[in-house]
Amino acid sequence: MERKVPALFYDGECPMCTRFKQTLERAEGFENLSYFDINSPLTYELFKELDPDACLDEVHVICDEGKIYRGPEAVEWLLKLNPKVSQWTWLLDSKMGQKAVDYFYKTTNKLRKDLIKRCLGCNSRNNNSL
Image (tube, rainbow, N blue to C red):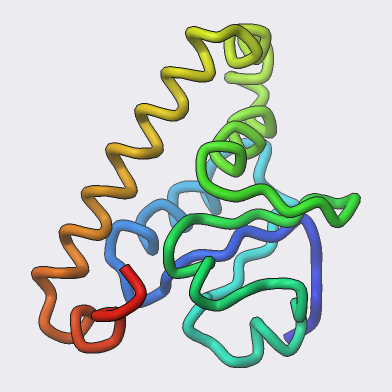
């Protein structure tokens, strides 16, 4: 495995995160995106700038320029890659667009954390990090 950017960091032990990754792999505009499981120690050897606890807490993306996007900013950056969405990105730049992305992300991240808490295997792994 080698360091490639742009890169999405996802929780390979979370069914929702894995499904999100699989969807992006098939979607137009994401052909050059690399995917790294945050549960792999190799991920943090390749990307020393990442904090494993922060990656467990929210989605991370590193873009071509090396900038790290977290949480709603990562989702917004990903949305702009899709050509079907990119024509509407001006909406994301408005206050209402920002609120919509923030709401979507916070709701989804809360659901992910609730799922992890209910999963016995996930709960033992992440008990103190969420």
